[in-house]
Amino acid sequence: MNQPHDEDTFWNLVDEFIENANQAVDQAGDPALVSAALLQACSRFSAFVVATSSLDRKEYTDEIPSALSFLSGQFREQLEADLEDYREHYKVYIANERPDEPLH
Image 1 (cartoon, rainbow, N blue to C red):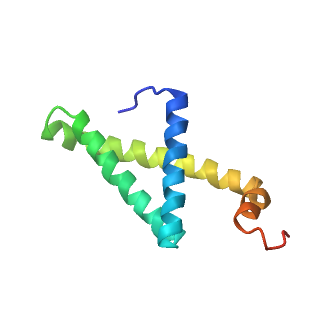
Image 2: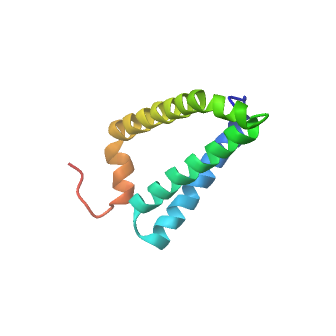
């Protein structure tokens, strides 16, 4: 499940997913809805990856606890890092989103 990846390919995919999410926000008008949909899609795709990495249903069932621990731990680490990044650069990032509002 934890396979090495090509760093450039990884970040290109991340950028692609974010661009698609930004376009979805333009269409749906609600970033929270898009975020919830992305989270659901990530969950379903991750379950698919775990299932297809298993030899059979028993192995899949046995892998569920470790996969859940690993994937939720990865999400938590990445979310903590991104929340910290936004905290440190809030005025810069949010100014791009709200160009007409004064920065305090």
